[in-house]
Amino acid sequence: EEKKKDPLMLVQYLIENCIDQAVIPPPYLKVIPVENIRPLKKMISAGEAAILEKAIAFSRSGGLFFNGYGPTESSICAAIFNMNKEAAITIDSVPIGRPIANTRIYILDKYDALLPLNIPGEICIAGRGLARGYLNQPSLTNDKF
Image (cartoon, rainbow, N blue to C red; front, side, top):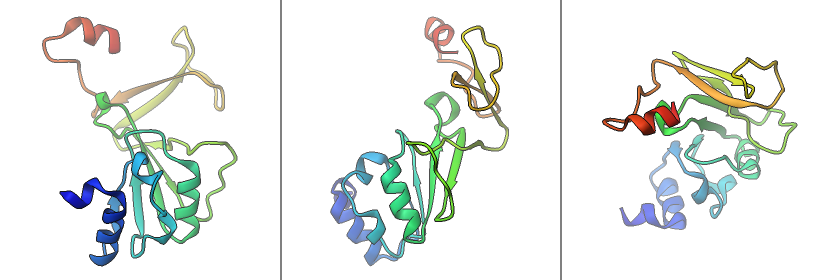
């Protein structure tokens, strides 16, 4: 528990215990040298926007970087992007990727009309993993869903 609270102790723990897969939130990634975490082969980052520089550094060092995207209402992960050293990122942020199984993602305009590819809009999520509402809070459910 103590090692999880200190990013540098966590890195040392990963190395000493030959951990090859880990979920590491972006705030930790800001302060650790991801390219030096060996034997880590797969890293998943979720909970906040992924840090592009860290994703590129980890991928270029031979690891697979996964960006998990999704709000709490969709069980945290509604989409995933797999970045490896061959991935070409031409924008200034890590993409959210493609929907996971049994999930659909739509990009809609302010009239709830479906938008074409590469046009900004509002992300709307549908599927089996989506919550049906907030327990005993109909006004919050109506506002968020």
